[in-house]
Length: 208
Image 1 (cartoon, rainbow, N blue to C red):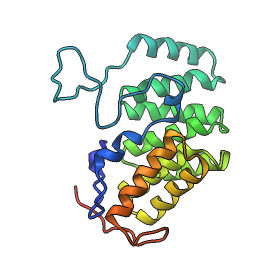
Image 2 (image 1 turned 135 degrees about the horizontal axis):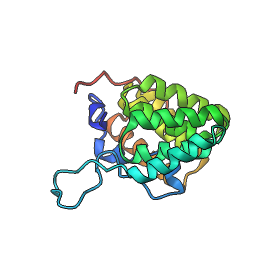
Image 3 (image 1 turned 30 degrees about the vertical axis):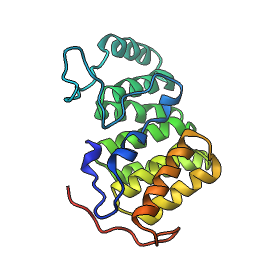
Image 4 (image 1 turned 90 degrees about the vertical axis):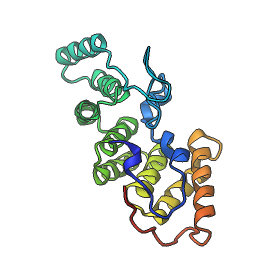
């Protein structure tokens, strides 16, 4: 699933402003994966035709072997989820994140990564439900709230709820990357819908 699939009908929020914000929490501590709208370029690829990232097969096998030998260890399963996420193989990412969450249900980062992967599978309701689980673990997990707002806006066309999620991010961490991203989203929303405020009407569903 590509973020272009979620077009916010009549909202006036530019897709390019937000498309790169939907990132897994694991990316904070490791090399960032390519933004959803700008896939990683490969050797010989056209600069105007983004190429799909390639899975590191050797690393996948190494981590799978570790996971097989240690069935109670969530870490290699999380790392496999990260690896497949970065390769944009979201079905596999979901499989490994679900295993990691089952073993360590108290980790909000992995829970949120699972929710993001659901979104990329075109399952926004499952994504939102998973984000709620993340917030039960950590009610102040701003990356979860930022992603929650994106899914609410683009997948559900619920601008009022997205507005509230982003406002909460700004309240909690105004100077963080998530806080700055939320501010830009709120500014764009206010420009497109001056009367929205904190409890405006949701936009009409868009069309692809």
